Image 1 (cartoon, rainbow, N blue to C red):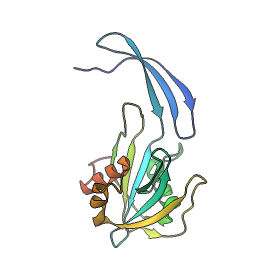
Image 2: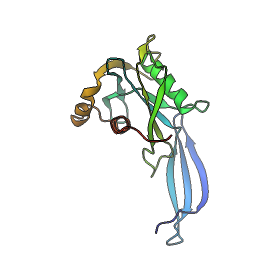
Image 3: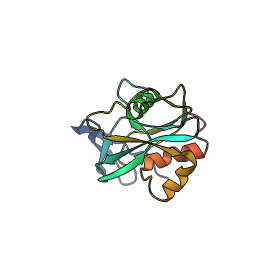
Image 4: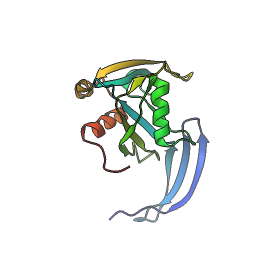
Length: 182
């Protein structure tokens, strides 16, 4: 049966604005040998599925540098150190879309890539969102707000018009009824 690997040392190698690179040296319990592992430390990521009263999903279309392509996504972003994930979700919804929600409902959380990432992706549902202003974009954002019928989402995923894995996971939580606890 696999066992946790004892940590021998951990050092942060380099820090960037959205993540740090950490090297962990750990001992394999099976062989007793030491190995280095590289971890991207990053704050938790939040996603919001914003639904209008007529079941439209408020989505965003933006260029993503990792894939060098346009992506259709839901509002989301990194939680800041002083934020709760729910506060971050509210902030990202308002900043990226100009929409607001009275209530956020926790749908689920997961580890995006536990082999190399230390964070969680947390998803909230925002029902009956309403437009309260214009988006307030960061200098590194260029976003188009798009309303999409909720009933079209599964087909957009099948047709690969929605390709971001964390967005697909968010809709999984929505359509499967979410987790039972936060």
